[in-house]
Length: 457
Image (cartoon, rainbow, N blue to C red; front, top):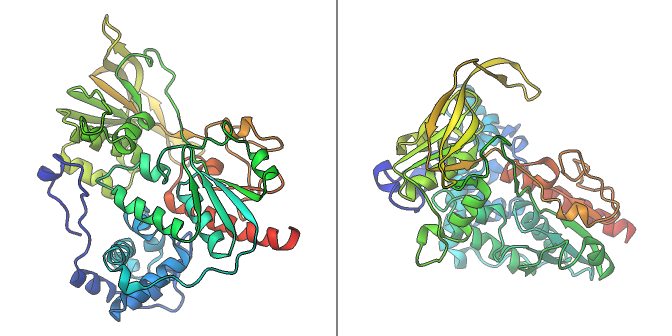
């Protein structure tokens, strides 16, 4: 796919990947062999008819490609950009047995972007199902909440989304940088969900302004909880309270949702020193590092306690970051933070690590090399170790069973929780995971809610 050059893109927050031109998309789509067993569909968490929309591209019927995509996936412009197709549908592609799999994600993005420009050619969506007169509350407007709300609206329910922030989209808005997922794309997908009749209430903190029990008592027949996992995890080592140390959540929220990269047009200051160190190996860590580079840091390093092979970040994003000049320091783990007399961070004392026997995740366990301590200079540190659910919902909702790690216990097939009339899905039940897995959970919950409301309400 065409991209901005590394030399150009480090100077702006514009989208790096430029998308397929039409002839490229047609050429790629023509590689699909339309195999009868359709293993790619099996690999898709929302079961998109991948051969169907690919065939429509080959037939130059893009309105039909849009229809097929959106019959299963309400957020194709987002999925085409940030979903890890390489481990899901593309990993199952028959072509991958002897060469490169079909670029399903890039073709999905192509179709979604075409629709944005040619809305009049697509036509209005089929009329909604007859209104059932029952109301459903969706708490959180991230990928799980948006998909659950869209599916329920298509089934005829009156759906209201309650969002704590001032913009809908959840992690899609506050967590993923503009250069990977432009906010105009997220807003377009949110607008589509609203066009289905979904009402959106912003700046509503469920658990403070209103409780889940009050929603159930105030006329909502069911509640879906999709509030994600927004509480950051920390290292709990000496010096972690020094000035200049951010959680990745705060850093990315300032940059993305509050648009610190456009300061002073947007009055969100963010202090970036010359040397920035990011701790972690996932997509969030790589996103934070690439944002810091675009905010004019002179040196950006990512330190990770395992090797490159174990990094959970997408390979494509690691390669993009490396091309941009980000330095990956692998098999390194912090021991303590070092500061000056004013309380500002100046460095990190780290251990060199080796790899031992596999741990409970199946990855080699990192092991400290005795006597290997060394100092990594840092003016700014961003800690990107993962997240856990905010406890507000669990603390204010009776009869809701919570796992030890703070996630809500819910049936993996339906999303039903221990509380009557309440379902949950996405990161609030699994911990931090992928956008498409959250979408799949939202879809399954919508189906289960519909069944329950038909049978028992």
